[in-house]
Amino acid sequence: TQLLEQSPQFLSIQEGENLTVYCNSSSVFSSLQWYRQEPGEGPVLLVTVVTGGEVKKLKRLTFQFGDARKDSSLHITAAQPGDTGLYLCAGSMWAGSYQLTFGKGTKLSVIP
Amino acid sequence: DTEVTQTPKHLVMGMTNKKSLKCEQHMGHRAMYWYKQKAKKPPELMFVYSYEKLSINESVPSRFSPECPNSSLLNLHLHALQPEDSALYLCASSQGPPTITTGELFFGEGSRLTVL
Image (cartoon, rainbow over all chains, first blue to last red; front, side, top):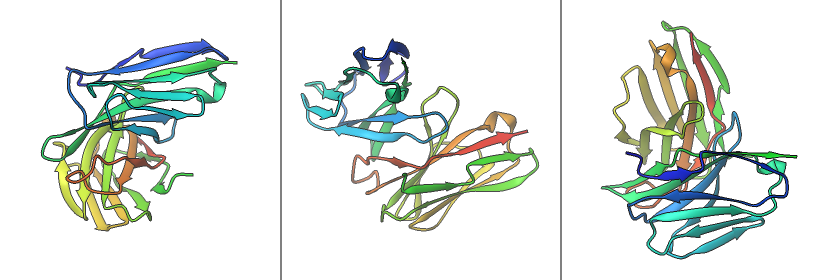
């Protein structure tokens, strides 16, 4: 079973639209990270959320950590073609050491 | 620009070849990682080095052999690979080891490996 369920798996939208990507789990995480990956490149860290209920903004991107630290969302306002990429959430959990578990990713395409 | 540098960017090798992937970081990070990523899948952890010692091996076949010559360098030696080993191999580093910190990862651009 997948520890982190990420949805939707694929998303194709027009430039200017808003979108939300979800990352859900039945497990509690000590922190949750969001990465963005472009084809042929490595993932780039966007944000880390640590506190339950925390909201962080990065320009047009808004990240939220659930109150119970089991889920997170990424909201993009007025999507641009440059937002196209694979968005990965990754939850950190202590199991003798901090284990990072990736969601399956959301492939976003923003059409001009 | 990424501060984790991986070479080569692309590698094609036969099943009998021996090759190595290299990774370098100069951020003073104390943990370094190898991940394997297949197309349209998330990265899968292979190895973790903490303070230059192997701390996690995710049951990776012995045809993959990691090496950490010093705190800035990480190698992955490849021998007798199979075509299904073709993937993007990502190196990453984190400021502290996973025994201490939740470890935000800084990834390199990856080495695209094709095994013929």
